[in-house]
Image (cartoon, rainbow, N blue to C red; front, side):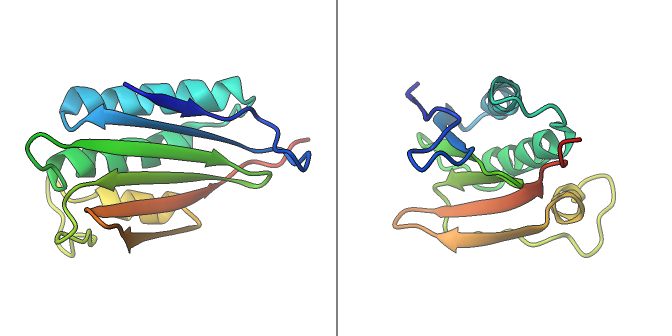
Length: 142
């Protein structure tokens, strides 16, 4: 596994940082992505991580469930800004754009949850596959 990490301050002095890593497209890989994202946010001093953690969990789960291509990994990128956290999950299956299930039953609530927790979310194409992204507001400091 190759981890890319930038420190929590950018050259301009603004608070920010980026964490990027590839994971196996398995349930274990999705779980590890969530755990490492939460640890990275805590290392950056972000204390309220629940919304970001759930967004990472749902997008990673979707990548391994619906975006999996045999022999290909998925990538998680978490970017920290002053007022939000941006989560991006890239997988190798570009022909399957995610859409919230109009009639969720026991499954299909994931993107509804992302939609409720994120200030915005969407999908962008890549040369191979797609990236699903979401921004989650950071609580204001007191």
